Image (cartoon, rainbow, N blue to C red; front, top):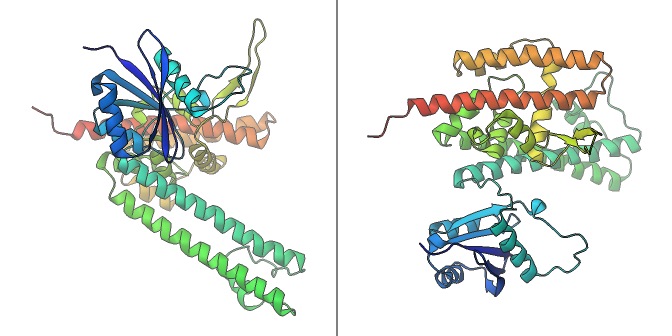
Length: 377
């Protein structure tokens, strides 16, 4: 077998800068090519047999299209985390050629950290879940515009009327009026935007439910199992699975916590040990939904109607594990609050531990599903 060659690609929307690191020799730039399938195929042919190539490029806005193109050609490719690429202090010269050479050199040295590449179904579901998240953010902004307009003009809702219920929206639409036609036009426009945002969120949530029903059976089994946990309904479970992928790719719960950016930062040297808050160097989408999911654990353990309905679809051992999570997380929440810990720190600690139960239930669901598959002859 020929010697392996390490290829670094600096990928842009229209062009790709290419550099090659020979196994024990020089690192040289090969120039810039167009980011097109035919050009990429010609590059692979020029570089040698696909099995002798190891290609890498940084994760970025171009996504994983190039990864799938190279995989179809039989080339081993890894997408690496751009924030973890080694950089030299004081290096102020940055070009596409130098970036490609740096990738090739670091890849040969084993200094790069690859990221998880989802398959087509996983990526499609993740994009849908993130679109729903963006729609919720837009809805909140639209509601804030209405609220602040009413606040500036001295309009207060009637006593006992909760914000953004159906009655509240009916009050804003049909009761609130401004004497100035221009100002009332602003009110009408803001309210229409709230209604549009609500319809958009509802449409995307329905699309998420349809997508989960059509998802691969193994993924669907994990989504169903995670809903045994209190605070983890369909949207939260789908977000976790779409952002994480197979939970079995993590060897332990601590790895999953680190992936979510919930690991503890540390700066220790010599005899000094110094630990800080969480690193936040992880998947922000996963971290957000887990912090939201821990909120019910502030209350005593209980199984409501919705949770009981979800647990009917889950095996008894997983429901028992979810019940254990309620007792453990509620007790820890109260213990930390009794010690005077600030609420944000306590919520983060409970969310971190909740991820441990997510990992345990997800692993059990994956193993149970794999056990039901027929043994290949």
